[in-house]
Image 1 (cartoon, rainbow, N blue to C red):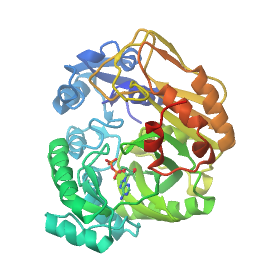
Image 2 (image 1 turned 180 degrees about the vertical axis):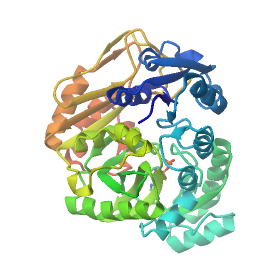
Image 3 (image 1 turned 90 degrees about the vertical axis):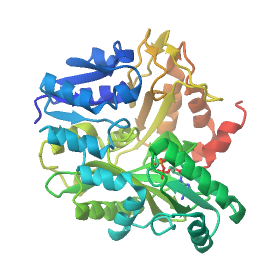
Length: 448
Ligand code: ADP
């Protein structure tokens, strides 16, 4: 096992990784920007190193600074968390070139899945069903027109390097294609420095269902079931559940077999998530994330496992030590992402947290780096807490979530807690009857 792990991240996910390391008896090194000197992940770490000024590109994305911090402190492994450098193949390569272990997949697989065109081609070759679309990239408008005519409108123009819902534009009819194509390309070039785009059929009422997988370095691959992440705003997840209200145990087992077989053939290692759209009983792959995800706790609650501990174990070369049959799915779990934003306008609301009270009790988990007196800086992602509940049935989990949301107090800044309280009371949510488009309409409707 590792002697010391450097955590190249901040906020709740840095704490999450520290907790797993501490339980394994592994000391941790926190890195932080000057804006985060008093952050909880720094306070709770065994050691900490300041790696630069507030802007992420100068600190949390500053590869030489992070590698120097690892060298100075004698860390032998780096966990990247999610976001920042977690899907940067070059970083993973440099970590390994410095004789350290990157706690994640091989750089080649990060690179492959980071290009969604390459990812789709690879998955098709491994027998995973895809969303109908272009065969590779579309170089110009004429090519886009041809593909759109073949697959039928509406179509979605997507950035090959896309992430965070950016570089994605819908064309509902032929006269909208030119604008969608141009704006998706421009947005992709600005956001990712890469204007390659491809086309997909735009599905009108799918659910977003993703499978969590874990592979050791010896060829064993298991899945921990699915998460339903259909509740999204601007293609960004707000609330996730495991299992999906739309899936049967048979569907889960069938798709689970497909994804584990595909990743075994690929020779993938460590944790990963395959994302699908699910409509009319059909799964269609959209992308793979080669890292731990924000919503991993719902899977942990459902399966009773510590995914970060598992990542550390397999990265250190240990075999999985269990088979698919030994993984049980018990009860139901739901996660709410709480952001420092106005619950109706979504205007960012950084600033001082004057009071903080986290809910508790049976089946309630709060992953957050907030504390009373903490000042949420304006420089980073607005997510400040994740509230996760687990209960024997979905109805029990919803009752528990409502109770926990009522107890949760974050004062001094605006948060999306009131929006989550509205969602749990919505009949469509309670029935589990929603698609990826439902929340967008729901947030537009006036509260009350
Ligand atoms: P990103 O990497 O930017 O998150 P994804 O490909 O994962 O992009 O898609 C994000 C979300 O956008 C999906 O969860 C879904 O809600 C929506 N989406 C993506 N592809 C399609 C599609 N072909 N049809 C309808 N919605 C889609």
